[in-house]
View 1 (cartoon, rainbow, N blue to C red):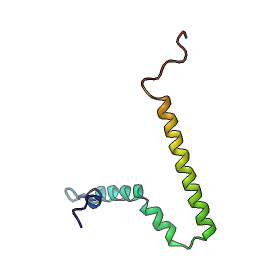
View 2 (view 1 turned 90 degrees about the vertical axis):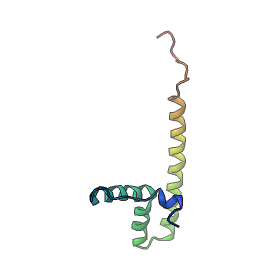
View 3 (view 1 turned 135 degrees about the vertical axis):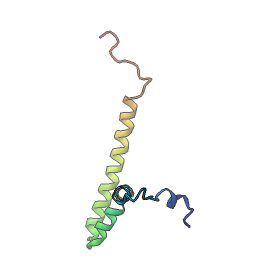
View 4 (view 1 turned 45 degrees about the horizontal axis):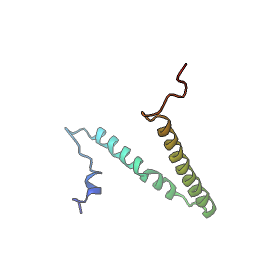
Length: 87
């Protein structure tokens, strides 16, 4: 089980006894994976209507961020023609 790619990619090594740096790396990995937010959410009861509203907000935020990233990539592409050639 420890040789599984998911676990190997999430392994934090302590180098030269520097536990603080390893703890910082671990906390960053857990925050990126959303584990910290899941633990905070599960600490208290969340009403079903608020859970639905939170999930809908998260889904709409994902769609919005994906659309904005697509638009920014479209505008920032290197093969884009200059719209104002004479200026």
